Picture 1: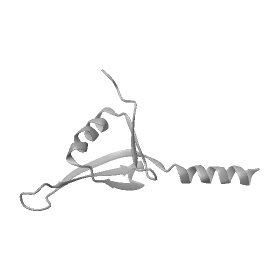
Picture 2: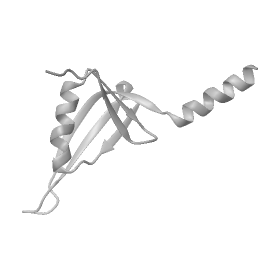
Picture 3: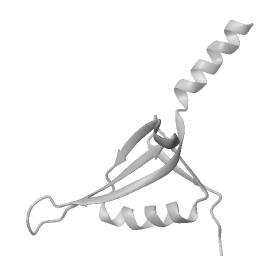
Picture 4: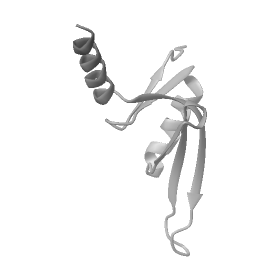
Length: 91
């Protein structure tokens, strides 16, 4: 019975690898003089246990940063590459 519970736990862990976003660092890099640059958002997960780099386009960056500001708790699913913003306050 213990082996079966352990197997189920391991399978669940493989399916969901979710970490709390504890800090972010946004940056912009010039690609070519006079051309559009690239944005990157570095996610610091679980106080530095892991990191992940997002490369949103300019249209996605503004709403993403607003959601970070509104969210009391943000998590990132490393397997599915999904940001989850929770406890969002509405007006």
